[in-house]
Image (cartoon, rainbow over all chains, first blue to last red; front, side, top):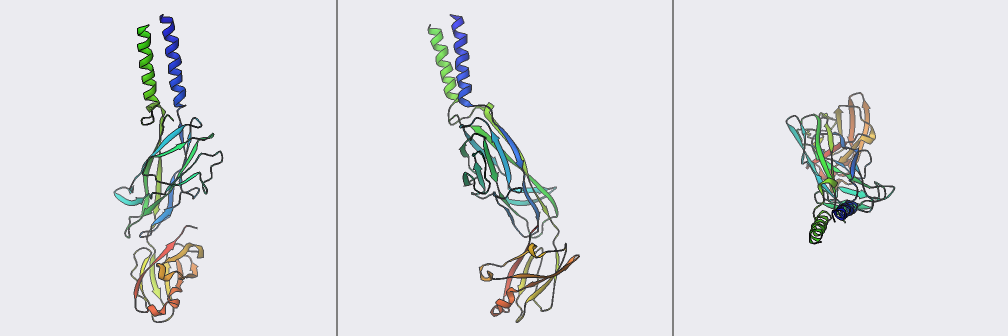
Length: 157
Length: 136
């Protein structure tokens, strides 16, 4: 009887793994870069601006649904000084097509503050994020930085 | 046979939990961190020549009192500018406002704000103008 148990266990475990898909990976294609900014003058980087907007690529099992969660900063920092950042509710876009189009993505104006649910395409999923930086009138000169964390997980659907 | 059924039930329950929509298995979660970066440039020095607008100017934001006639000339010290690097933002009332870069040599640029010609009726009123310098 024991000889029956072991194959059954293996079959069921394989079914579980197949249903959840292969582990996905995230590739960072581009950081969110505001370039030079001037005190008192807010600067916007559109999610559609190639080379400046943040760009991620998620690979995994095609057709599987994933959740996308951002941990967004509210300030950029420079050794004691900070500078406000704003992410609007339309600052994210995603595209799961084989040829992702940043200027005309499959899903546009998504809210990066909420969980985004999308399905991986045959080549995965590309995610773009824009943002706004708001320097104060008297803002310490120098290079500011902040971290943006993206977490992607299968929903099981 | 009862033991087999019990194990099968537990495994099916486990599979159901792992495949649930509300809780993704940890082994199928991926995270990445990117950097957001920006460089704050030192405020440009600014002064006015020609007419006598009042300029109160930290860092690219200028409060200007209209002269009775003519336009406003600004002399900006800083990196050399090109025409495509300057824009003027002053609200809807100044939608037709324009900025002309008269000359830019070395670290001194001379900028004319044509808005004042088009809005002489606003003479004496103080408004806030924002000169925007782009990277391109």
